[in-house]
Image 1 (cartoon, rainbow, N blue to C red):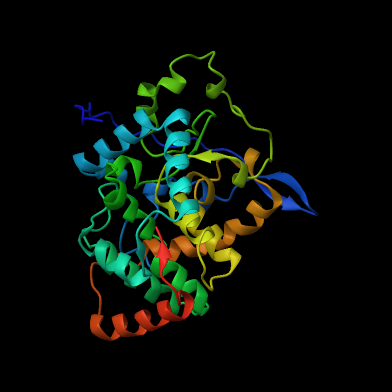
Image 2 (image 1 turned 135 degrees about the horizontal axis):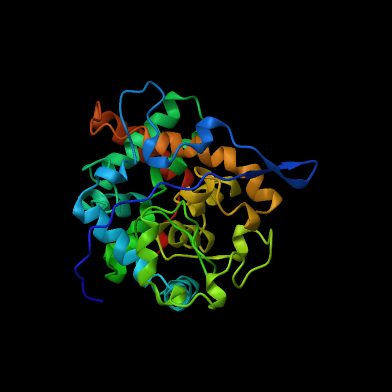
Length: 312
């Protein structure tokens, strides 16, 4: 796929809407708080000293990455790519590498969808894990933050463009929520070319409250790493795999969109995803203290939770 010229269109703010909580096992509409109604690019760190996910002032590179993502992430494309990497994982025909090796591979990888940091993925991984440790989260949670972006290895492994690897994820096969970053770029997506398209409805090809595990999401590093771990041996709990699989699903855990697809399990996990996101976002200071000491600590933890190499 070749790059195209992208028109610079102002980013529209998200709509305000109800979200849903589970009450006695039943999804129930609840009025969101004022804080919950803030658009993602209007949120600050807890101490108010820095602004994250500021897409209104993002670079042309960030805008272009999302424009291509929204144009080419169709249901057909998603199914094609998922079939490729799941088949490779099942047949174990991919490279056999340790988690640490892949982390080192990504030491020169810079996420072109991220408006917040110029640090490599390795630096960001250690920053995120440290944020979790400082907040008192359990060891497995720290390790999960350390590895959560390693699915971006698919960019190097499969030669995929960054629009097919990075950025926020969203369900395909149904109308995209207005809260998705740069929503206006979906106008170029052939799945939504006609208002009569079955993909252009709220439920699309799915059933209400079917659960996220039954949705097809845009191709990206979240699901890829989830599939890698699901097809290999490790010592992370099931919660960790859920956090990895949906950590980039900001329209859900930040903007409270797609409640109509969420299962009871998804509702229960949203708060944990929000805690995860706090450690992910608010660690992006572009500064890492005592990197050598931290590297030694986290390398030992990776050996504990991933005693064997993984097939990628």
